[in-house]
Image (cartoon, rainbow, N blue to C red; front, side):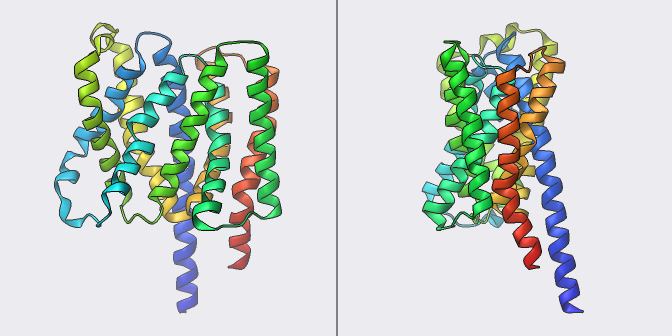
Amino acid sequence: MSSSLSFSSSAWNTFIGVLAALAAALIGSGWQIVSRHGVTTSLGPLELAVLRYGIPSLVLAPLWCRRTAWPVMPPWRWALLVLVGGLPFGLVVLAGGRWAPAAHMGIFMAGCMPLFVAAGSRLVLGERLGRMRGLGLALIAFGVAALGWDACRDGLAPWRGDLLFVLGAAMWAAYTLAFRGCGLSSWQGAALVNLGSAVLLLPVAVVWGVPRLVSAPWADVAVQALGQGLMAGLLGLVTYSVAIARLGAARAALSAALVPVFTALGAAWLLGEPVDSSVGLALALVVPGVVLAGGAKVWAGVKRK
């Protein structure tokens, strides 16, 4: 009876983690499309950052004030979570969206993050790569390299955004590893990242100002407030944190396989950005690569049970 209950509890945790990972993928893709639209129309990266981190920090202020239930962590880990999962990460990716299309954002962010997570897990946690996971990472590397080479060869502006997306993927991978085992709940993690980012953002907004936030059409501001503040800034962090807690860092990163497909199709439909041959080739390599890189470990864990 106890083994049956234990299996049911484990299966339930996995089910919740998978749902959270799927929700995180949908939210992440929607954020990429909304961000690309925002920085190429009426708003800039700084204005979007104000909406992304300002709104959730206000919503989660009561949780932050209740500090009694928070785990004890060294200050460097608090700072690391904010720096790699908060404002610096957001500004890097939003700035990249000004030069590169949304499909590039989806491919580079989703493709490079498992590479960095695998490297970090190997260096920090001592995890070894199996054959299937290594094959998946190799496919990801080829897909990302092919798309990057195509942009550089044509001398187009997207290569600048692509580099920023790679940097953003490295930062998000660091957040994934740093959050793992930190003791924070998903809501506490969201409160920490958003409030810390809002504190960092305040002097920047005071010095440079956010004029576009006032002059932009109210409909654009409302869409970005929903997409940046409530969906990405609040629900995105929470769902991804739940996925990490229930599935582990490597398995949570598996949700990234869906993001480039959702983003490319959504951007083609909503923004009119074409899915050219280089994007198609990158998707054909990166998506199965992400599945193999994370899925091989998931399936191995299921078989052991």
